[in-house]
Length: 152
Image (cartoon, rainbow, N blue to C red; front, side, top):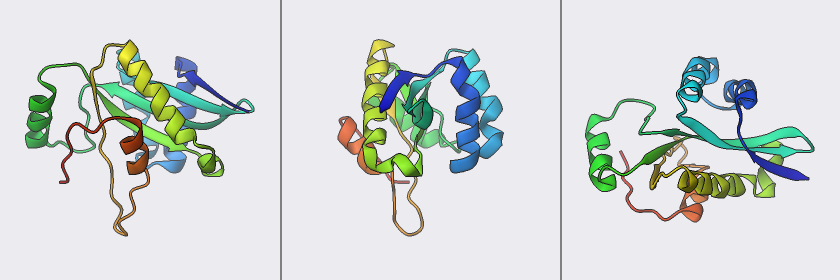
C-alpha cells in the first residue's frame, strides 16, 4: 500500500541518498538541501510503499535554477509580479514504482501544500535529454495550469 506524507527533517538523509543514487546532483546537493530545510525554504511530499521510500517531490521557496539565468529570472519575475513562488527541486519515483502513478500523486499533493503555505506560483526547470526524452514533463503539464513556459 502506498502512503503519502509531508516530508520532515528525518527524511532529509533519505532524500540526499536518493539524490545521490538517481539524480545528477549526487552528494554535492546534501548541504544545499540541509541549508534550505534549516531556513524553512524546503518542503514536499514523500511516497512510501509498505514503509519504504518509493519517491519524493521537493520544492524550495523562490527561484533556484540549476545554473544562473539572470535574464530568464527577470522574465519569471515579470510573470509572477511579486507573488510568492516555489521552485520544483526534485521529483523522483523509484524505477520499480513508476507505473503506480506516484509521480502524479506526489505533484498533486505538493501543489496543495504550496497553496496552504501561500505560494501562488510554482516554477519547474524541465531537462530535455539529448534523445529528446523529458520524463517529468507530462507530470507537470497534467498537474498544474501552465501559465508561461520558455525553452532555453
